[in-house]
Image (cartoon, rainbow, N blue to C red; front, side, top):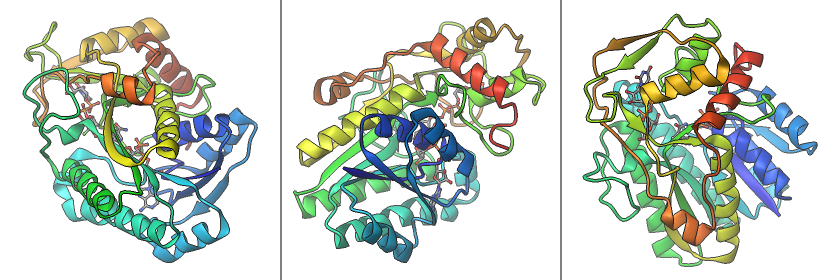
Length: 336
Ligand code: NAD
Ligand code: UFG
């Protein structure tokens, strides 16, 4: 069985390539390397001892996709390709609509041409907007609070319409909470370009001296220590969730959303302290004002993923910090 992984050279994509190869599938990756490196795929091959097929192409390019589908017998697709920086999406919304929605429409049209009807899509907890209560369950109301989130919401709707028009499709909408961590080999991990927007890469870059101190955005939230709380999930657990979703897609039809998180919140200061313990390196910090748009806390109910997919997270915050540290220590400049 052959799985096409769009955006497979990226952070979550590369870890998913490892798990999908280890599960015995053949892997074909399409990525334009706009936010990733070919080296990640070489390291996937090193970790697994298996080879994958790589096409450097833009997923919006339907001719390039047609070539990939004609040269390979694709059975299912995992679709990661897209942009993900919330702040940038506010400044440059059209770039996000063009890339995130453009990739999906192009991909679905070529899948249609080739009769491939199984897709696992990278959605996000952002589709819950400002949730009224915790934990967040899949049937809670959806809304968008920025253009990035709106692309995820629209793509979910496009995929639901696709299923409604042809019930032969299998569509898994995976709503990730906060993916962090790295493969335990230290060979692949998160390698953001420029100054990181997200908390964990910021902490790990302070640890290796690329940045001087952590800026904690607000200490007056309604949480145990006043700093924001999120449901961090180890990227390897997340990647294994994609294997379960692919197995589901091979045995079911439908369009179903699944939260992938741990069900537990961790505050900014708790994550910083856990990283200091795991690395033995001090992380100096300053308290800054709140970042606009941030919520007090967010955590998932993952009961549906457990009961339907047979998946649950197994790695804890200490594992996430230990593995991030190993990756960042051995690759202080990421893949550069
Ligand atoms: P990433 O940027 O590391 O990976 C995305 C990959 O897609 C990159 O390799 C990039 O080069 C590629 N890409 C982008 N546009 C492309 C195009 N037009 N054609 C071909 N390739 C293209 O990001 P990630 O963290 O691995 O996220 C993967 C997916 O998961 C994204 O869709 C993201 O929105 C979603 N997601 C991420 C998070 C997170 O916190 N990391 C949370 C929720 C959802
Ligand atoms: N934070 C800091 N300092 C930093 C970065 C973040 O204190 O330098 C805090 C934030 O205020 C927040 C927490 O750390 O309380 C986590 O922030 P991240 O930026 O790491 O993650 P978010 O929860 O804000 O955003 C993530 C993804 C989004 C996605 C969202 C869904 O990055 O793409 O989860 O809820 F939309």
